[in-house]
Every structure is written in C-alpha cells, then in structure tokens.
Image (cartoon, rainbow, N blue to C red; front, side):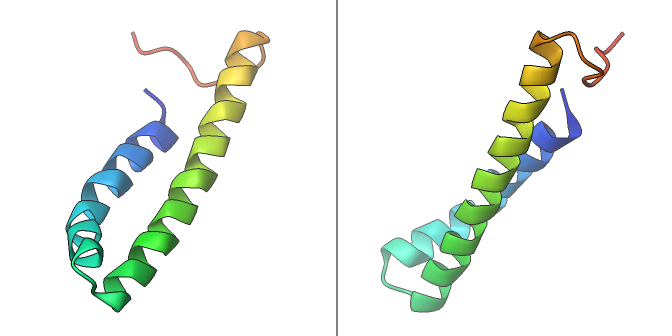
Length: 65
C-alpha cells in the first residue's frame, strides 16, 4: 500500500474521538473534524492521482514484494 493510503487510514482513525465530541456539540471538535476532512479530501486526491499513474503504466509506487 502507498504511504498516502496509510496516512489516510491513520487520519480517519485519529479523528474518530473528535467526531464523537463534535456530534455532542463541542464546537472546537467540530472545527478539528472539518480540518481533518479537508486533509482527507487532499490525501484522497493524491491517492487518486497515484492510481491513475499505475493504470497508465507510469512511474507509480512500486508493488510490494
């Protein structure tokens, strides 16, 4: 798996507690969740670009051995 994918999984995992606090009405947690979701969006876009490179036979990430 790519480094960006691992970062995405870690980010989603770490935002869970803030998400629960945000659902309960904590405004600071809501702000942190919104920022984290922007980071998720950016990482997802990077992963999408990597997958297009792999599809097109470019110099995408190497496959694990």
